[in-house]
Length: 320
Ligand SMILES: [Mn+2]
Image (cartoon, rainbow, N blue to C red; front, side, top):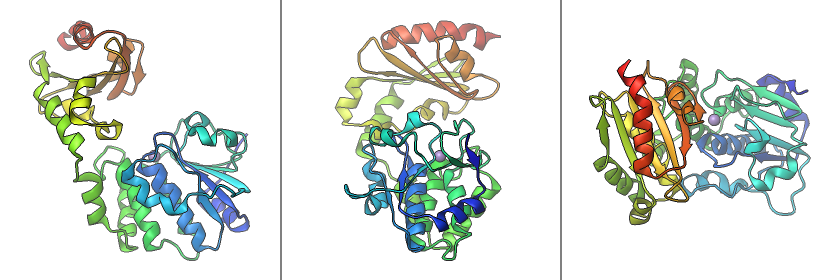
């Protein structure tokens, strides 16, 4: 059984330990990479030896924040720390060998499986970066400009630039402290939230022009084919949060994105709803799951066939 630690207790343990390797999760986002690199920077400033395990899926957007901390091949860690990672299933492949020997896990997912020896968990936090902030604030150097910059990346990306429902007064308090500490918020917001790649713009254009409306325009269905990806040269990164697009249209209560995956007979559906419509209820009809306002499922049919199926399934829900 894991021992649960407060941020103060984590700081005390970090102070008496050394030689850390920090692990981030599969398909790494700004929170896991920002939290890991901020912790590495903060511990380095305390004179510790600390590195990040290279995450092979790190995208160019985040590489600049983490690359200076990557562990050399000959580094032998004494302690492994996982950040923002709810289960060992989410470890990248090269971290698999550490899964039974994690000294400390710092996380904000209520689904955390408590796989680490010590766990610092607060599911009230919008981002894992808030917990890293709490830990570093108890240390002598507190938060330096490079640390603040990385924590700002963590907080802003996990909250959609402080716009998602998970944003709390505490999130905004920490963000303000980070800006005071030197986080370049204007530059980061421009790069992270106000810049779109060519692939992204191309995809948004194609997707938007193909959106279909049903049930008095309360349902919007967007389609993504592999052909569209080829035409625009878009990659996985360019499709980040694309499922939010149909649901962002005025008056739309159920936004559905149907994406053709590895074959034309393999479609992934992402459903976003506004209350009282239940995305989970819709996806459960196809063996999928998720949350009340965001859920997903797989339908082994072509896009037009999947559309027909989902419209049939929506009939009762939309007309009740
Ligand atoms: Mn997170």
